[in-house]
Amino acid sequence: MIALIAVIVMLIGMMCVLAYTLAIYALPFMLALAAMRFAYGTGAGWIGAGIVGIVAGVASFGILTLLFAMLRAPILRVALALIFATPAAVAGYALVHGVTGEAVPPLVWRQIVCLAGGACVGVAAVIRLATSASPQS
Image (cartoon, rainbow, N blue to C red; front, side, top):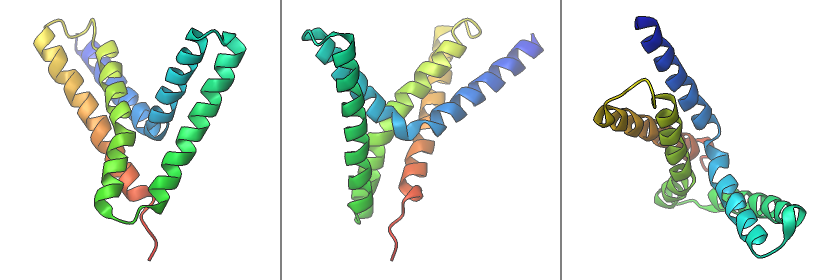
């Protein structure tokens, strides 16, 4: 039982590190998937939907990165970092929920652990994004 708990803690930590590492790409990926689903739903086919998704993902990442580089006011940079990090926090919650699904039977404790994992990933992503491209004076 102790070994299982240790493995679960290590897996949660690894998933949070993965979500933290991919935090910058969570929002463009989500927008690309939404655009791809919309294009496929309107009859674009698999290839057309894939092209639309790739273009939407690259364009959204480029626009958000350009905005992040151009903004000088710290409050606006933090607001943009929050926009970037919100999907990362949701992904962190989902990752922890998937890992602890069978290991933490009480629903209340599973939700507490999942919320803590999502909050840690979200806060880490905001801090990483807010300090990564600090304006050069």
